Amino acid sequence: MYCRLISLLCGLSLSTVLQAAVFKCISPSGQHSYQDHPCPADHVAHTLKRGYFSQISREPYQLDTVKLQQKQPTWQERQLQREQHKTQRQLQQALKICNQLRSRQHKLQGQLQRSRSARQTLRLQERLASQQQALQDAACIP
Image 1 (cartoon, rainbow, N blue to C red):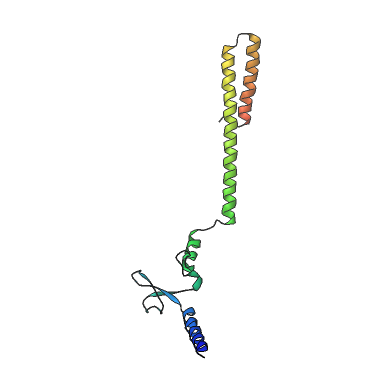
Image 2 (cartoon, rainbow, N blue to C red):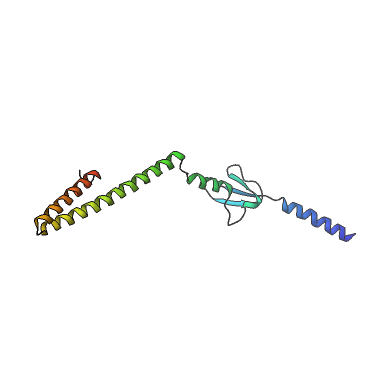
């Protein structure tokens, strides 16, 4: 008899504990307080659900503000970024090619100044002319 009565009383007391809610109240001055009864009328109230009341997890309204602050780019913005990166890569590649062509041109000019024979001079002048044409074709000469 006593055993049943004790188990009944324990069951009733546990049910009230399990149904308890936690209220987070924010005063007009911005102070936060947690309590087990509803907030006063001039306070902003948030009822904390069981899964959110911990020091590690954030409350749902805080998660929403974080998501809003991290705006994801639209499809058009991502497409524009891709095109800009592609254009930058193309410009870098063109600059690299122009630098290589100019380096070859300077090397040929140096060889032309040091040439000893007429045949070598004629051959270097032809190579220098073709190098000049390659620079123009690559749009390296303004």
